[in-house]
Image: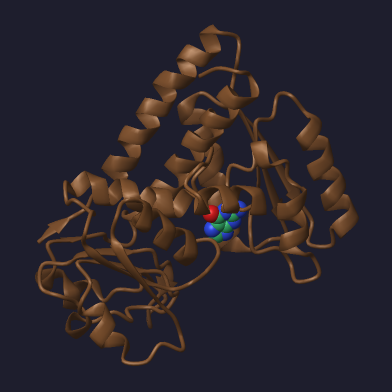
Length: 283
Ligand code: GUN
């Protein structure tokens, strides 16, 4: 078994983005990212801080908008409108989840698709569906990079995606399909779950249940990717996969932390760079 080093793969992606950013700067363009955070969810605060740090590392311009939990939908919409028009800003990211009185969908739909570096806007989701896209959603794209780093060929393999969220499960299945995997998506109503996961050459866990995936659910020699960010019974960060139980059964496995997490941010940087190029007519 080999552990996939998400930090190392993420660093390589960021170094590439940084080099590309320097080239853009020499042409008078500095990629700019605006991050909006509403309320005081502590996990979201950590994610946003890491995104700002990554912008600095890559040489990007960044703006952070930390708004109080009492922010109204109108105020949030007006901020998005302002950022849509701001030529220094190439990418807009509104950290989800929003406080319950605000509508995620309304914000996502309001972001100009060309600045939608999360690839959550219906226009970008549709573009991904037909395989003709500018941006890939950050977490699924990061997972693909991790799979590529193993050298395992996805084509013709059986891939099982556990979870059907719009952010991870659904687009994840589409990216695997684009690379010619035979894909099955499982969810909370799936029957005989273990029978399905045990057939997977590539198993992606994105269900949000701490240490849910056990060795008896995994095929011998499978590539196991853990998208979970959960807390175990002691409050310690862990994934959807019971790492200690599963590790000796797979060929490759991602740890939590240090697996998929760092990749999501690197892919956001990559999307922001792409956005800056697109908006300035640079190939
Ligand atoms: N919350 C959890 N993951 C994400 C993400 O990828 N993008 C945004 N905007 N919010 C999130």
